[in-house]
Image (cartoon, rainbow, N blue to C red; front, side, top):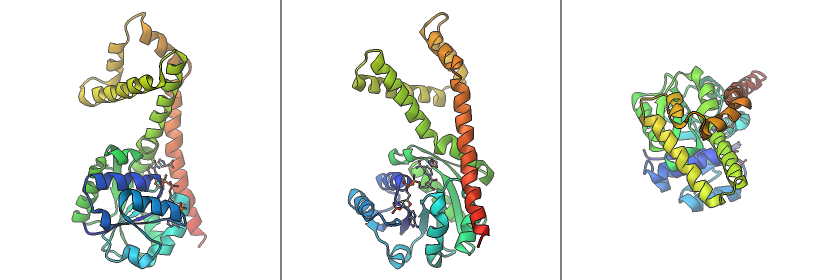
Amino acid sequence: MKKMTIVGGGSMAEAIISGILENGFVKQKNVWVTNQSNQERLQYLEKRYGINGTYDLQTLFDGTDIVILAMKPKDAAQAIAKIRGHLSEQMLIVSVLAGVSLQTIERIAGKQLAVVRAMPNTSAAVGKSATAIAVNERVSKSQLETTRKLFETVGLATFVEEEQLDAVTGLSGSGPAYIYYLIEAMENSAVEIGLEKQIAKQLIVQTLIGAAEMVRSSAKPPEELRREVTSPGGTTEAGVRILEENGVRQAFISCIKAAATQSKKMGDALSSELKVY
Ligand SMILES: NC(=O)C1=CN([C@@H]2O[C@H](COP(=O)(O)OP(=O)(O)OC[C@H]3O[C@@H](n4cnc5c(N)ncnc54)[C@H](OP(=O)(O)O)[C@@H]3O)[C@@H](O)[C@H]2O)C=CC1
Ligand SMILES: O=C(O)[C@@H]1CCC=N1
């Protein structure tokens, strides 16, 4: 891969940049990034990762192989319209925009393009993203392989039907935030029951890693693994009872459904905005 161009330089773009450079998917000097107007942020990305930032569209797109779209869905119409003259059928366009369909991207661009819609998460920064990918019919076999390699470089990559991507967004795109929320709550409780913050953090992180590894490597379903921790009349039983009484399971289910619905809403909002033109 010769050159990669990233449009949007926020959290998700940085996670991908950090992950791909760490794993040598592309050389620093061949990565180009732009944003809307935040020059300070562009300079930070240049300095921190040794990549190139510019607002000059010719410089950005000349000879590029992969274009990553990483702006917010609400900014997509304006951003893609601005760059459409520089996009060509030979380029692989990779969108990480929540909710925005493959078709919408081609509609804004006003031309047929090889487009990939991916839903990674910010754990790409440490090579641990969970990414689901859908592609349109113009993506060639070798572009499909490049896509797989790109996202495998930053974690796990799997191909799904496009209709499933809103659900993926609610589950694993937003997923790290739910886990951080749980960690925040565990840290708060640890301090309240008399543990030092630093020690508590180590114990919490290792507990999460251990439980995730058990679910990943064991043939037992999570309910059974949970039963093995729960001695009758013991501490776990006392704790989990409180979770059940407070509807925590249902809250998680509603949370993920709301996020998936919001993904679809954001895509639909952009699509109906386009009908105006
Ligand atoms: N954050 C996450 O965990 C995940 C995010 N995503 C998706 O990634 C995308 C980006 O999200 P995130 O990184 O969190 O967002 P941020 O708000 O952190 O970054 C958005 C970036 O887009 C830039 N931008 C806005 N308008 C334009 C434009 N017209 N031309 C060029 N660049 C533009 C902004 O530039 P400026 O700062 O100059 O305004 C900014 O650099 C979203 O579509 C989101 O759905 C997907 C998976 C996970
Ligand atoms: O919150 C968001 O809209 C983005 C999409 C998935 C994770 N973050």
